[in-house]
Length: 168
Image: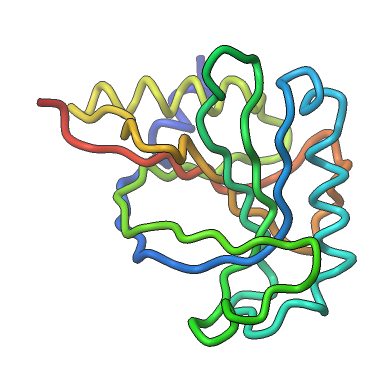
């Protein structure tokens, strides 16, 4: 219970300006994600980071997750970095460009030693307690990870960002 209270104190609402990002796309299942396929994608982006021009925050890997596909157990995930406007015209082979609009997010820091599932559960509970709900847009959430972080670390630290809107 103490962990829940700590997580709740750290949660805040922030508005983040829209941005362009370039990186790698993965379409797969929850089972594939659990088996480490997304971690492999993150490692590949880090290996190819030097190919992306105009990176705004080279120390940040953005992990974007989009809604489950209809009639399947799959979803789309992007391992990307934010780029300057001019850089989006130069997309390295095998990579994609993603546009994320200006949105309000519930933000929480997930720390080493905490349960990832519990961090998300606590944040969703906090969102609803504050009179908000998740946006029903395509982007379900994203994580901001330190680029130097080991993608295969079983106890990672990252920032959770969940798009939200006021309850009607």
